[in-house]
Structure formats: structure tokens, C-alpha cells
Amino acid sequence: MYRRAAKEQSNKTLYFITSNKGKAKEAKEKFSDIKINIIQRDIGYPEIQADTLEEVAFFGAEYVQKKFNFPFILEDAGLFIDALNGFPGVYSAYVYYKIGCSGILRLLQNFDDNRYATFKSIYAYCEPNKKPIIFSGECLGTISKKEIGNFGFGFDPIFIPKDVSKTFAQMKTEEKNKISHRGKSIDKLKDFFKNL
Amino acid sequence: MYRRAAKEQSNKTLYFITSNKGKAKEAKEKFSDIKINIIQRDIGYPEIQADTLEEVAFFGAEYVQKKFNFPFILEDAGLFIDALNGFPGVYSAYVYYKIGCSGILRLLQNFDDNRYATFKSIYAYCEPNKKPIIFSGECLGTISKKEIGNFGFGFDPIFIPKDVSKTFAQMKTEEKNKISHRGKSIDKLKDFFKNL
Image (cartoon, rainbow over all chains, first blue to last red; front, side, top):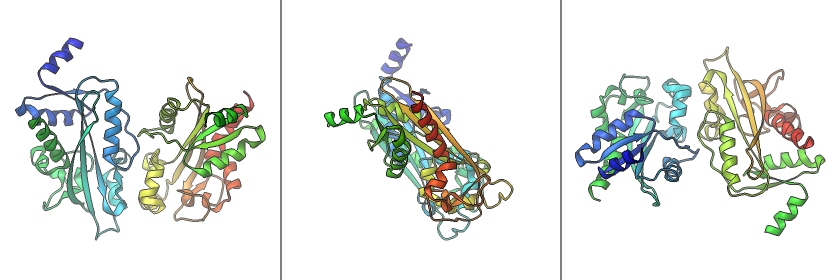
């Protein structure tokens, strides 16, 4: 196990601490042309209750750092809805699981004038014994009046990016990644590695 | 500082790790007749994102234990609504802050037949170098159709305890504590100390 990890390390390996295979695959594709090999590690870390994704990512990164002695990345994302004071925010995964897109539509039914929302993504990059470095990406948009589209996951069927006339769930992965919050944060992370 | 802490300790002191003065006061009154002196310490601890209050309390207690060398208690509570799959649950404080009682009423507006909900409270008691011990209390009830009452806090104005015809927010503290989730969990905690 150690020898395998050491070999991966010599080939410019970057570990992605996540349980989400889709995210890992996306990062792997993104980094293939700069010769960084992304390897998923589902070792788990606590996500704290906090106001910002930055706090969640920072706490998670410092937790992982204590027991994992290689450079790694992790990611957290959320949907922040203006009329709901930023809800569901850092708890988006939980809220989606509990009340779904339909719950959000019910909460917004009397908010015809203000359906503005922002999808945010934070990547944290962490080396042993160093402070985590944060890369953020945002995608402005509005919440639709009903669920539309079958692609993507989570709140994608109700999020219409700014200057676009369809939801995230009506876009294939490549199209979505060009404008999405996570597409932007991972681009910043990639630029960081290019300039190292 | 150390001498003061040591003196409190010899007088059967129990520290309550909380930022909530009301909770500390409630515990102080409850424990006065068994000669345990409750002292509030607002030293803060991370609340993790989890499915159950037990997990949140356990993680918090183990975190505090690492830097606080005296016996202490902490408490976490939440409102679990049946028709919303347990939402807002462990995130009740955050959800209240973001969407309030009115948000919950909007989410439940088409659920006339199933407005069942449970308020839960968990106390964790922790001694140095020992596993935290958990004491739980529940209060069954339903969610009202509108906000009623001015006492209490949080979701009290929309929670009607079982076999009662008014909300928690229509009850004074003493009346509420006799049937409330936190009243029950703290009674169990008190019984534990009586039997030590």
C-alpha cells in the first residue's frame, strides 16, 4: 500500500478526498493535459455547520491533513438563494435529500420578483504542514418556476444560469462545466498548478 | 484562573459548554437542589453536519474533551418533521435563522393530514479520558397552521405538543419544561447524577 502510494506520488499524483466518483472523474479529465494524476480517496471527513463553504472546506482540509501525509484536494459546493437569506447554502446536499427541488419551489412560490440565486464551489488544496489554499467559483442565476431537465444532479433542474435560457439539468456535462461554479473553481486550481 | 477552576471543582462543579445563557440558567436551576453548581463556559466547538443529534453531540464532546480538563455537559436540539423526512432536524437553528417559522409553514401547506413532528434534545456528559454519555428527550406533537404565542424561541410558535391545545410559545418556561424534549433529557441527566 505504501509503495503504491509512493509510486503514484512520484508521478505527480494529487489525491482527491471525496466520496463522489463524478467529481473525481471530472477533475481527472480536467488535469490530464497538465500531467497531474488525480486519484480518488474516500477517507471521509467531518463537514461542520458553518455560514460559508470556505469554513467547511478549511475545517475538513485541516482534519484530513492530520492523518494523510500527501498533497490532496477536496471540494464543497452549495446553492445560495437570495430571497431565502442564502438558504440552503452550505447545507444544500442535506436540504436536497430532505425536501428536494419541490421544497425549494414551495418556499419561493410568492417570490416572483426575486428568484436570484448563486451556485458556489470551493476547492481546497492542501500540502502536509501547510495552510490549505482556497479556490472559489460562482455561477449567478435564477430559480425556475418548475423542474426542467434530466441531466446533472441535485438542484440542477431548477437553476437557470444568467444569460442562458435553460436549466443546468438541460445541459450536458461539457456545456455545464464551461459556465458552472465548479468549472470555474477547478480552472483556478488548475491555473495554480500550471504556474507552480 | 486555575485556582478558581480548582475551587469550583471541589464544590461539585459541572461546566456547561454553551453560548446560550438561557439553557445554562435552566440547567443551573434544575441542578441547584442536588448541590451541583452549573457554570457556563462559552468556549465553542464545531457542530458537524450529520443525520442525528447524537452524532453532533458526540463529535462536539470529543472535541471539547481534548482541550478542557474538567467534567462538562453540552446540549443539542432539533425539530424533526415527519412529512419533510425529518427536516430541519440537526440543522434547526440554521433553518430557523434562514427561513423562520413561515418557511416551515410554506413547506407544509399541502400537508393537512400529516403535520406530525418531534422535538428532540440530547445532553452529552463528558469526563476527562472517558467516552461521552448521552441523555435524550423527545416531545411528540404537530405543526400548527399559523404562528401562535410569544414565549420561548425558535420554532416554539408553530409546535403544538401532543395532548395539548396550545403551542410551546403559548407556555411559560416552567409549564413548557414539564413536557418539553429538553425538560426530559435534563431530567435523565439529573437522575444519572442522583444515582452516582
